[in-house]
Image 1 (cartoon, rainbow, N blue to C red):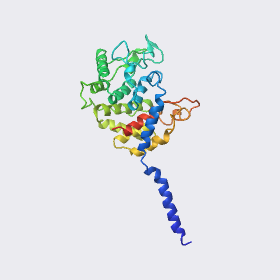
Image 2: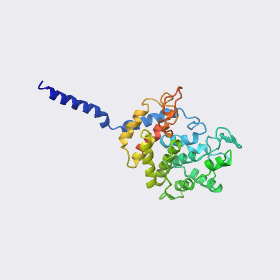
Image 3: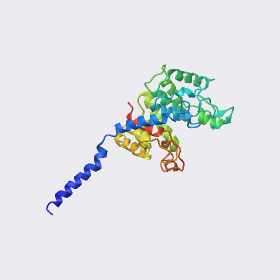
Image 4: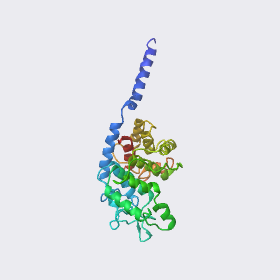
Length: 301
């Protein structure tokens, strides 16, 4: 019996060591390996050089191409109108005023995603053509099914227009025009707000105090959203290794995610608590763009 206390101490210490061994291991090399794996596996799924997400293809090709090589967003430029961008190559989603898959042939979310891509994958000639097209059209950059949709989807804000100047070889990369009002959105709009902050970071080299607060608020609102956690981590929030483990635990290690994992092809634009986070009944394989972008935010310079 006199050895029992020592045995208990030894056992407790051994358990403590084992239980914290995983936490002590640096997850970043494994995260980099999985980025490479997902880029390789998803490349086999590209359709004619882009990520096929129906009439959201331009935006998700842009996000995927932030991380993975071999994707060029200029494929979405209208071949008949320099600087005009469309949801899919050849502009089939909205034709002659008719909804062929979308109520407009472009949108603000496509714009934000494309700007983030071009901040990472510069294409000065495309940027300059876009500026010329935007200026020629007072930054109403698409057609839509009615006036309400045209204002909501096609009229770019002054911030989005200014971002093109920041991206341009002729523009200044030193400052942003203003600090946006910070209404806390939810769902897909919250995701676009975070993408917009990431675009600001890569275009201007910094974010505003208001944008930093937005990232904090969204990270606290959705603690299991890996993109929000990664973005907040970059600016003084959650520990980066903790976020890396969150991503590694959530996403498969030997394959791309599919419908047996959750019910949407890009998880982090949906709030946790919706049915999108639950397994689906089909077998569709996804591109893994959600994992890739969050992991890139953690690991990029």
